[in-house]
Image 1 (cartoon, rainbow, N blue to C red):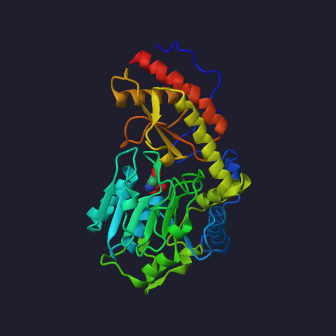
Image 2: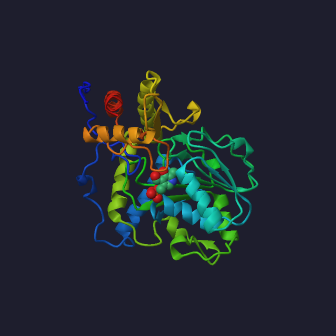
Length: 381
Ligand SMILES: Cc1ncc(COP(=O)(O)O)c(C=O)c1O
């Protein structure tokens, strides 16, 4: 039943996964030739590379000089957990969640830390009521909900004169969206996302207010070594200058340094945002002309420009989940789009990564294949 004509062109790179994401277009294994392999990360060569990763992050993302940037274990999850376990409990907590990752942080805070937090949640496709947030509390949220493709539109809803801290999981936002550093006290992301780096390490960014909290508050619960950011009531400065808590992968560090160089070569943060926006527009132009597909995001001002989530809306579809999986499978079998099925906990559909490492010409080449796979599956179901 696949006699529906196939498009003539295929994406040159079919990698549209939402993590690990496509490597920068100029990447190849030779890019890692200078990695400090087999050397101590505490030797000058290792420390210099770790420091370059920290300062390169600051430069490309425009992070203020008085913010601390640390390379931490266990990717974004590690960075977020360190922040939650080290900082929360000093005052009330509000948790904002509108998809799987945000919900995971709610579970950790309520069930593991046993904090009586206010959870403000919304269904996939929507945002909770940001205007109702009380910034006397510490506020935990995800800048971009990777599994629903819904992001906060900006930071205007965050109070400048807040008493609490804002703790922001920005893993699928950093390097694709404008992050207002004056509104963010703790920001985290992982290398495997927007810059297409390797998994393993997380980045933890602390405002002066977050450091002040760390140095003035000791949580009631024990902290494993891997989470400890202070010693004797003072910040462990080394973590933020390249003396990591434990051993990092120098291969992953080299890869991240390459990704930062590539980011600079496309115009830095502005260039990366532009690339992600252009990719998302290619999907939006397609969606606008079809009556069988729509964004999961209900409000265009909250539409992600990285993890773009689509749902099928055609009445002829018999079983939404089976249909969406079959469409993703067809795309994968043709080698035109890998890993584009919706996240396992999210509503049925497709998720197409549009971050800056993806070429717009590849997104454009993929769109006719969505027509093909959809029509083929309608005919086959
Ligand atoms: C919003 C968000 N938070 C956390 C994570 C977990 O990231 P990692 O696996 O790098 O720890 C992801 C990964 O997709 C994510 O998208």
